[in-house]
Length: 309
Length: 276
Image 1 (cartoon, rainbow over the protein chains, first blue to last red):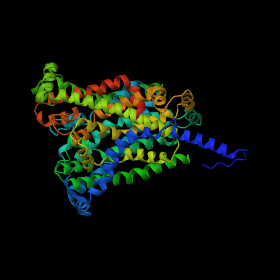
Image 2: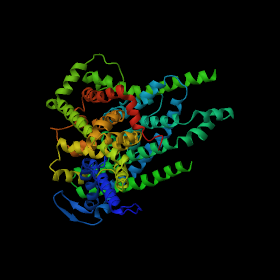
Image 3: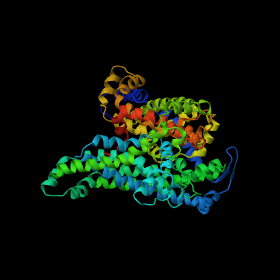
């Protein structure tokens, strides 16, 4: 601690300053050890496994013993059709669910912030599925989507449409699960958008109305750009959730029929169950890389635009 | 005239659509849960001829040696313990992080962001748990939920602590308060509203969690409610009434949370929507 001062007794002042500094350092009202308990848990159960996953993804692993096999696990991941299908499905699932959530959430939020009747009821009923258990929702919709006896196809038949076989049709299975995911999650997107829209100053709309703008124009020129932070949140949240999603898929199709609705998260679980721990961990690393590679640039892009405003 | 038409027309249309899309599936679940086995197997949306609520309730509870009762106890312990630990640890971190500017802030922020984005690595986590002797144990799963939930909770707490004036801390320090007393006696009580938010959001989340118990707490003895439901899916393949009664039962806790803490849940889940 050096203190440049022109005081008559520099040594004494320096000593006192040093003393004060030490006291401030030692007895800060904000001690670092407050980090400690959280840091221990977080490091042991999140950071260590994450770093370890990079190492073990290059091995054949039995939890007690491992042999180093280089890139074999990753090669297998990108060559075996069943695993590769999981990879492409992850992208499809993430893209479909987050797009639908953004679009539907925005429309519902505009509707629910306009002057219509029964807003409270509509808001609660749309949001409530967010709090339901994925497994419960999955089972209910598996029954509703039954190709022959299910209510959805019976209702479609009543109006003369022959519904697809939903979960048992390889072409529809993944999309069916994605639709249920949207059913369950659109409420969250809606309330986020409502919070965003409500925070837009009402004067903008009034001024636009004065100038004779239609409500469509208002939406595209005021609501949409000014609700951008909400859009960013919805996109990021639903993409993170969509790319990692496991519960609904596992409850509804278990990746089937065949492996047509597998995503990386379900592949990870299947390989884990089969005892291929190295391969399963490689799946985790792939998922990690995909999520980071998509989310980081995207959130930087969305936030940068926000600053420019 | 046209605004009134829009107000009522759109409203009625919206109500009709939500009834079909949201109320019907939920009502279907509730109705099937009280039907008898034969009627439930038809999978149709019909009013039950007999109400078997009590019988189905008893059957579900007593299935597999009262597994669901055990599961409810396990889930309650899991939820209460992990949320309690989460609230205290996350508030401590958020407080220091918000108040003390240091070179650790960058690291901490980076770690929080990582915790929000990175999907946890499954098998390595099992490996760590096993080496600590916590694999397949409730305390292990509690710590897992804490580790995975920390980032989100710290974020919520931090935003709130920023609105508490620092002068309050200083006044308490001048009065001779140590850090522990300052935090638990002065700051912690001020966090009440955000604590309620964290508690309701996290408890619904942890109660509904399926993936982590599936990986880290396998075995019938200490199943959680979500796992029970999953296990019953194959066992009750022919008795949909019991399966749906089970779904109905595990829906009740979140429903109660929603009825009482609607506003806090929405506030917690929309945090960051306005600021970005």
